[in-house]
Length: 426
View 1 (tube, rainbow, N blue to C red):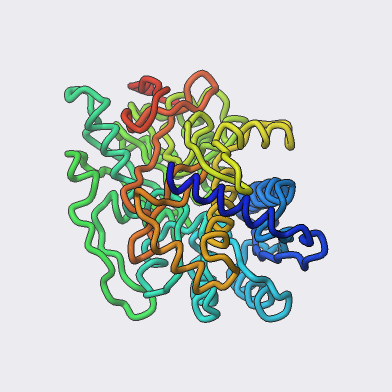
View 2 (cartoon, rainbow, N blue to C red; view 1 turned 90 degrees about the vertical axis):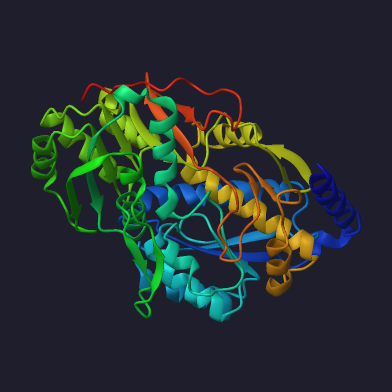
């Protein structure tokens, strides 16, 4: 609580001493987001999360006595466009800080540009390990860990929640040929992670989480990153392999919907299903009863009792859920919650540094510890030297009775629901 109290006190003093704040120039923060294209649904929710956070900060007096102005551009889900937009933010629009974009595919090249311009780079979505092994300073990931380590949570569910005689023995792993999905694949199957810049080895993940869990991979296939529509043929191949466990590593919730519908059409009968995407309301709307029993990892859950700070005042995850519902008339999902947490983190960094000097902000963020963390609606954050969170587990959720329930880990906080197993097919 000492860190929380200090932040609140610092903000109060800053606000009290800036009666002239109404006339101060706005503090511009830039965000390039995929508002159209393949990632548009997530991009729109990221914008909503950023905007809600900034509006609430401004209602509380702004940052350092200045109102915050969000400068948003649509990168159309295109990496080259995202690069150009961040360069424009810095060199033309005069932003003093930035928020990250969505997806590893966009975040990887953007990281290089922001590093060259000595900007703090807070990522809401960019879990590929390769992003964090380039030697960039001042890069900070606002989710629990890199994609390559997501499989540890699935392995934990199987080990801790499924009786030994009922655990899956075979698996089919199907995946988009996507930065994030490929990272999860590498961890599950125990592959080497290579640096795309020079071909050097980043990590050797052998034997992989599935082999460690005693699970044999009986079918594996990747589909193209864009333009894929042969879902029924893919689902039939999975069904013929007859796996106990189906793992679907999609690049978007829309792909998770298409895959689920195809598996239902061919009447696949797995005992367990895990997807890398699917926490969104759109997934349930697009799949209905077929979503029952599907496991999805997540960085956030609406019932998590995380305590944080916003605008110099205590602000909990439950406060965020209420504020989002009041603004948008619906319960938020993680695609809105994660960018809200990024916004909280950058506010705390500016207050901690006492300015928008990005070098000072980066030093303050790098100095966070478990005892003195950044506090957000996603919980506590402090980072290792690569920019990955330290000692922060993913949450595992499961769709049951039309509700996304938190099932693992069982000791993270109260309110854990019982795992439904087996799924008994689609």
